[in-house]
Amino acid sequence: MKQKVETLGDEWNLDQPAMKLFEERLRTVTPTPLDWVIINRFERREYDNKYDKAEYTQTTHCALIDNESDSVARALHNFSIPGLGKFDLRVSERSTTGYEPCYGLRSEKAPFYGFFTQVRDALGSTTPEVDILPSFLWFWDAYRVKDEWKYTDATGKELPLLRFTLDVPEDDEANWKLEARALELRTFLYYCDKELLLYTDDTYAGLPCNDDARQENSRDWCSYTFMKEPENPLRKSVIALFGKYIIHGAKNTQFPRFLDDEATTDYPSFIIGLTPDGKTISASCDPSQLSGYPGSSPNHPNKLEQVCFKPEVLQRYSTNPDKYQISDRSVACVINGRPLWQLDISTNSDGLVEAHLGDLSSLPHEELPYWKSFNIAPSGTPNPNRILRDHFNMPTDASDAPILELMSAFRKASENVKEQLGVSIWKEPDSHTLKKINTLATPTVDNTEAFNNAMLALTKAFADTLDGKQLRKLSGNEVVTFSWTPRPGGEPPYGEIQQGAARQGRGPVHQMRTKRRRCDPRARLSQQRLVVDMAQGPARVYLDRKPA
Image 1 (cartoon, helix red, strand yellow):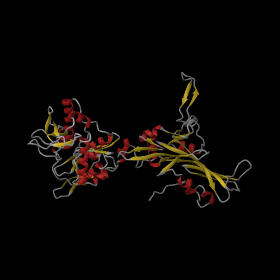
Image 2: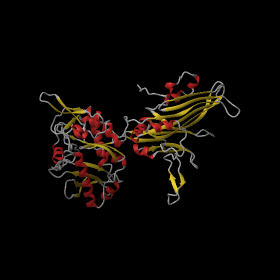
Image 3: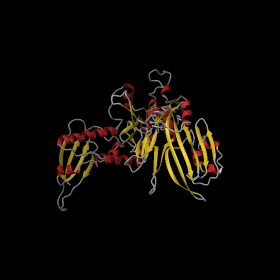
Image 4: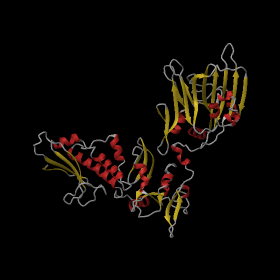
């Protein structure tokens, strides 16, 4: 159910035949819009009626004004705003060049007016040019996608900000319309302490009209005139509704990323423990209600309190690799290589996902209810490596991060092979493969789909990046098996993900094969094996030939 807002139509009888012509305008002119707002417009079209064809023209222009009662009152009763949206040079004796620039961002005759947007006909351009105040785009970190401007919020969601509609009929003047999302517009106005003034003019030319009429409607936020004039020898009859209105700034639900902390006014509480009789103990993640920060009260819960979640909490992120990156130690939202947010996590002895109570407050406000829905009472033993890192600032090994250990060993193996052979047998991954590698993580739930996704990422990471040309140069026309093993007696770099068979007491063997047979099918093939030890220390690279 949409919220009721005050509109211009509240003061006019919309049942009157003449007012029906302007019903769209009367219902959309409001100081507190909630949807889209038309901020620039020129549209001319034919209007058919049972008597004759008439012409209907709609125009809209806008300007910023200071958020002061005097400026608002003057703006509503001053029709023109000269000098906005145009560069000019004024003769000045104070300047060394003899000229003083007028940038078109402020009206010289009425300084309380400021430029916001315009659509102009540039000489040489076949379509109108759209000019938008750079500060508005910078505020939202907006970017253009064809005829839209969009921005990305703190959660990584792409949202519309502006849209431009252009219609060019054959042998006719272009019609265009520039719209802004109301809530984002009003957030910008609020933080800039501005109001937006809009001029609108809706005119019908050629409709039957036998009498003169004029009706005024003024309030503290608008000033409109309804007018009727009959036809005369110089022009057609005119029925028009024109005037100005103000859009107020307001702090609402939409915030740019750098102000997302202001969007979080109510921090949820999470379960952090159990009482002796089994009842849950909850605490807010609001930083002002936690200890461990400078100046905080020692009586509050500590920011390092562990909060437990069901493993399924990570499914939302693991199924969207274009937007999120998950590792054994963190989950992050990354857009085009730019991190928007990150939460450090760990897995305890019961397989639950753990996060610090204080860290949860750094999540975007829209993410907090989602994490709360997976919050459960703590059980199991906390990850010992994380305790050492976070509580005692001690470095730890990667035993609690098998994927991190695996990728580290993979990079080491690649370096050792290149050092021993003089060439790299792995190619730089393309963007699609790199995305798969970045999503490589231990499955968070026990189901086939999660396991298959992990195995697909492993294949992309290790098999699809092999350089077949280099392997063929090294092996000639023989069967090639590439294998790696952990150090004798050491833990396998895959952690719990193991493939292949044990190889004479050396631990699990992980193999990827590429085969190339001679043209002669009767030829006896041999097998050449290249083994690279992925353990610390010098790599061992050797050839092991045996019958195929």
